[in-house]
Amino acid sequence: RSDYPPNPYIMKDMPADGMVSYPQKAPMRLLTDRAPQLETPLQVFKNDITPNEYFFVRWHLSQIVTRIDIDTFRLRVQGAVNTPLALSMNDLRTKFPADSMVALCICSGNSRSTFDPKVPGSQWGNGAMGNAKWKGVRLRDVLRMAGVKAGAVDVAFSGMDKPVLPGTAAYVKSLTTAHALDSNVLIAYEMNGEPIPMLNGFPLKLVVPGWYASYWVGALGNI
Image (cartoon, rainbow, N blue to C red):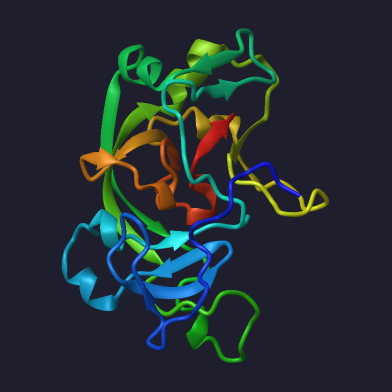
């Protein structure tokens, strides 16, 4: 049982052509609806920047966040730190310098449908990737405010998506402390000049350039 509201993205009937239009999204190829996985049409990649409405969607846990109260949302930083934090969106925008970068987000399963022999997993074509301009705050600055304790070796990240069954493991990714303190890792709150779409991890998304999208934790809630 889950306390989350019913998932509005679950399809009652699969379209014959496999293309669906979810909220904030243009028609995209549907791979699964629980959790939602949407593939970007190939012709979109004629442009250097992937529009938000065509940016691919990949979730690991099916109970994804479908609504956020921005006034009460807090990003929590805890563990081996001197000062645990509970940061509002206003805190992130006003207490830290903003930074931006263009970075490619690509699923490690991109083009899996072409593998020979076949391997398990979502059978993506070539559309499990997207290039966007991300804006937010440096993870390093947030960790410095919290005061990482000497001897801390890893920084772990989890989103607000949840499993259906209580026995399912949480989806958590980690970076070494040295990598997390690198200036190129962002906590993004904008994507191509707009708030991040709900299906791409609103309100916050970890941006880890050069690493597969599995590390780009969406709906980031805990560090």
